[in-house]
Amino acid sequence: MPATRLTVLAGGVGGARFVRGLRAAARAAAVPPEITVVANTGDDLWLAGLRVTPDLDSLLYALAGVNDEQRGWGRAGETERVSGELAAYGVGWPWFTLGDLDLGTHIARTALLKDGLPLSAVVERLAARWPIGVRLLPATDDEVETHVAVVEDGEERELHFEEWWVRTRAKVPARAFLQPGAEHSSPAPGVLEAIGEADVVLLAPSNPVVSIGTILGIPGIRDAVTSTRAPVVGVSPVIRGAVVRGMADACLSAIGVETSAAAVARHYGARASGGLLDGWLVDLADADAVPGLEADGLATRAVPLWMHDEATSAAIATAALDLAGTFARR
Ligand code: FO1
Image (cartoon, helix red, strand yellow):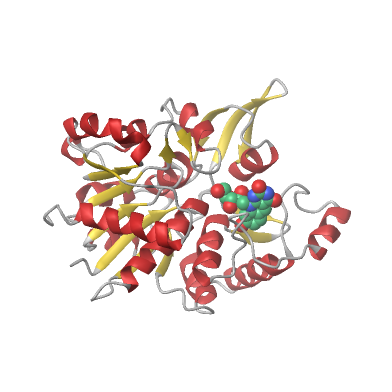
């Protein structure tokens, strides 16, 4: 693995599992590459007066080894005494649980933001508490939240992504995903360089719409990916027509993309035709999609994509890096 600088675009839950595997694969290399994670910030919100950043926290906690592995978000060994008090006062969202340890992170983050630190500096400060072994960057330091246009109880509404995702469990059909203010935002410091100067750029098996799509929606990032000299390889978040976690199918159908490994690849597009990808990994169950994608100029390999544990995640990351290695740096 000659690559020494790896950059991965990632959301929260699936992204965290993949990045942990990538880190393990990197540590096993003769010359361990540096990893930069560009994390989705579209899920971020103000709640109970605190700035909450779900995907950054899923990545941070998982890489620190202090995450609730079952839920995929929040802290291990969590208690919920304070959230009980917030609910009693009717502050925050009763259906969006902020655990006590998690609140420590949100209070610290909010205090640092109020001291004037940009989000990227806050992330660096919070992450310094643990040896997470990667550089974790928010896609942007600006507040660009994902909102979902829905029709609920007969009226058109715009919900914060977290309300749509957690309160309605994505059951209220999304008519559109919006990123209000994105046009005035810019990538966080280091993001464009991490993409432009990488030896390999990876798209984690995260939600193509509200994680990868929202990262690409920050002005400059999509262009950086399409123009980087590094090979760009993505990992399908869909196996055998079903999303691995979460309700990404509700997001894909909302933008008219079929929930299949091939459709997501075509949604990202082959670089040869102006899209993002040089290579694409699909699960063995989707091996029948390989010839068609190859015919579309997408180098595609079928490998086991279920991330059961760090070892399987590392094998997926290694397969992605091996596929990237078949491309000469432009
Ligand atoms: N997800 C839930 O399904 N229920 C919750 O109560 C909840 C609380 C929560 C608090 C902090 C946080 O960072 C994440 C939280 N999540 C919760 C998960 C969240 O919806 C996801 O991490 C992503 O935003 C979607 O991928």
